[in-house]
Length: 159
Image (cartoon, rainbow, N blue to C red; front, side, top):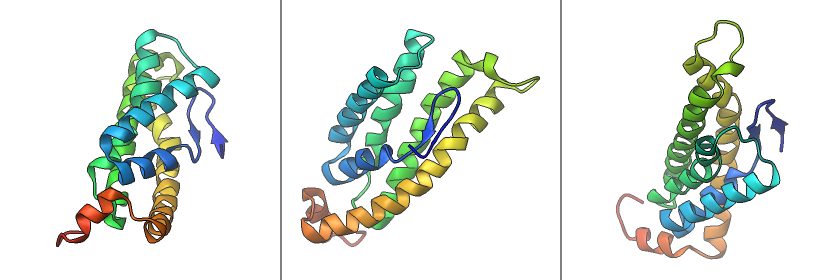
């Protein structure tokens, strides 16, 4: 963990293996692995105020990282996949923030603006780090042992 936010969330490397797994093995494996990681994160470091918030901030927020697997395991696919996956995670945390954490907003801040700013403060840097590291690791892993998904796309004109 590089930086921890006061009410949950952190700038960290936790999304990297989930995004990489999804890109190499597909979205179904990625979603299951992400949801499992979310439950593990919940067990280790819970911050729960409501059962629906638990679902939004843990299994759903990490499960949607598997959406990266909807994209080809190429550099372009990694950038797009990571971005889409983290935007989906942002939406889960944003919704949770608006519904369950509006009271944390300072002064007269709009709950929508507060939730967006709070969650973007750690997800944007985490996304930037994840893109760089995932692209480097994807190239290295594919050089050592191409994923079955990579082999499928090698012959296509858009890879």
